[in-house]
Image 1: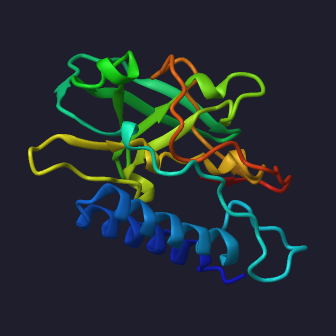
Image 2 (image 1 turned 60 degrees about the vertical axis):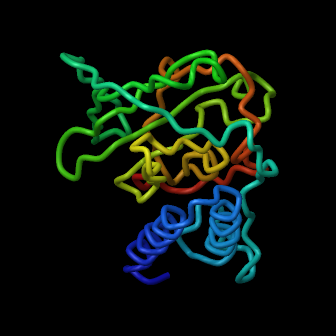
Image 3 (image 1 turned 120 degrees about the vertical axis):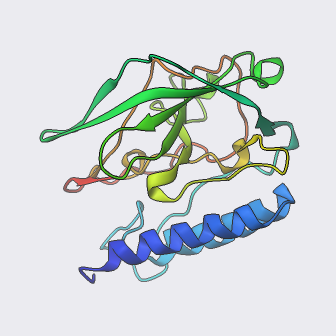
Length: 217
């Protein structure tokens, strides 16, 4: 494993999402996203499913629903003023600070709730959209800590529509790396963005969990 392999992983993720933003057809964009992420998961040494005991190219890939048009969404939004910073302990030595930044204004009819997009404070900044849905319950289809849809620091950015709305296609929702491997630590918010219905789009719960040493995700 190269000491620069994490840099390469990040570049690949940014490149994938750049392609997604350039494709206006959600299903086609998702197909490219799926194919290229599967190759990274299967082969890359920084893959969340990397197992040193596996032969090259045999790491697990994400388990995905088929593309679900119902959850290919977009939304207008409004700024959240005077919000309070939330501190998340991501490991023994680090705290991630986020604050509610903007709120959707067009999702309640489908999701039965609106969602908050957080701004990550400090160096790097960025937007962050984690969520919990009905599938995150005990023995449900999804990871109990929820999934991410936007995390711009890591490149996960679907962009905006031509009408200036946030592109919120839940077919691109994915599990945090810590759901696959104990070497990663992730910001988890179980009391925010709780969607009361099953969002059967995007990644399902990982098939296996690998124990290793910790890194920051």
